Every structure is written in structure tokens, then in C-alpha cells.
Length: 287
Image (tube, rainbow, N blue to C red):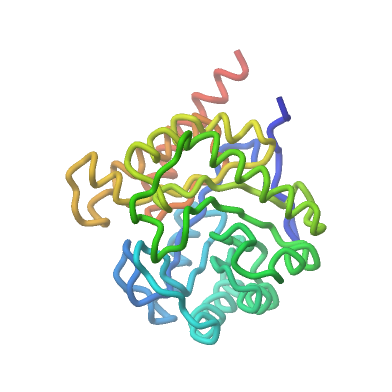
């Protein structure tokens, strides 16, 4: 069994992963995100949301300028850049949170890193742009590799697996190996099973239950299940913003099962729940 990682290595610092779960706050600078419906498309609103999430306990702010909801179409790089760069620059100047850029385009990632971002969160796991791996290696940025079946436009069209846990595990292991081969340092890589990205309710539940299997690959596991449709299926909450307590529950469970980074929209309630969760887990390890 590979030893659990103790840090995520970034260009200008290291992010400890052995002092409790790290919260990544979501800032969607998009007109049609499934979770907030364009509330933060205005750059000023996005900056204020990012500052709010950082004040509530988010160690990472994940800034995205392209919607990846099921059925969505790609956004041109120029549009992404216009949306995210002013937000990244302002947040970098006004808070100490680590900035992550949620993109699959190397052009956008490069500009975001120059503006102050330290993590590339790539939902295509380096498959969307052949230049992304070399960029991550050259800039020494943190790199999140996510599993997705198909594309955002097609991913929820009857997704099927023979063994979802084994297939996602093997895919992530292969993509991490590709990143290493391109020169990305091992301690810069985190893995995301892609909850809701080409998965049914059953697939999502099976992956969450088996997070320890993914953690045994030897990389930090990121869990991003906040406000997603499967929570609505279980709770009857049709509107994403109403799925707060289901989101808190699944991320607390994820932390207990080994997820080291939790990507969420609602930071304050999760942070309070994690204070208790992390204390219990620490007491168990000390006993």
C-alpha cells in the first residue's frame, strides 16, 4: 500500500494534507452553471464570493469560466480568459487562498498561472489539450486529474461500466502516469473520480463508498459532489441550492473515507462539520 501523501506541492508553497481535510471553494464565472445559475458571472460578484469563501475557511478557490454541466457546449478560450483573469488577479491581491483554474485549455491555464493561479483543475485529465501536461510540468503547478466518461455534452447519455470502481481507478492511474512521464512531479498531482461526470446514481455511490481504493494509488483524492443531481435524487431536492445538507453529509463521509480535498459551494457549514470530523479521526489515529 502506497503511503498517503502529506502535502500538495505548489509553485510558491506546499499545502499540508495531514492536518485535516482541505476545502476548495467553487467560484463559477459563468452564465449557466448548474449550481448557481450565473449569479457570479459579473467579475465583482465573483471576487466578493471568492473572498467570502476564503473567509469561511476555503484554503483553495477554484475559478472556472466554462460551464461543464451535462449537455453543455465548449466555451471559446477568449471568452474564458475574459471571465476568469480579472477575478484571479483581484483575488490574488486580496487574499492568501491558493487559486485554482478550472479549465481544460492550456492557453487559459497558462494565462491564469501568470495571473497568480497555482493549480490546474483539468476535467479531461490532460486529454483535452496536448499542451497541458508540458505546461503543468514547466510551471510546476498543482494538477488535478479527473475521470469523465465522454464529454460534458454526452457524459450522461446512458453511462455504463463493467466495474465502475476498477475502471475509474485504472483510468486515474494511467493519467497520473502520463503526467509523470511529461515531467509533472508526483507531489503536485491529485486525483478526482468525477462524481456526476458520466455516472448514474449507483455509480456515484459506489465510487464514494470506495474512495479508499482510489486513495491507495498514492495521490491525494479530491471529492467534488457539492449540490449534484444524485443528492437531489436521494433527498427529493430538485433545486441545487436546496441540497446543502446532503452536500455536507457526503463530504463529511468523504473526509472519513480518505478524501483530502473537498470541492464545495457552501464552505461555512462544511468547515464546521469538518472541525468535528477531523477531531474524531485524529483521536482515532492517536489511540
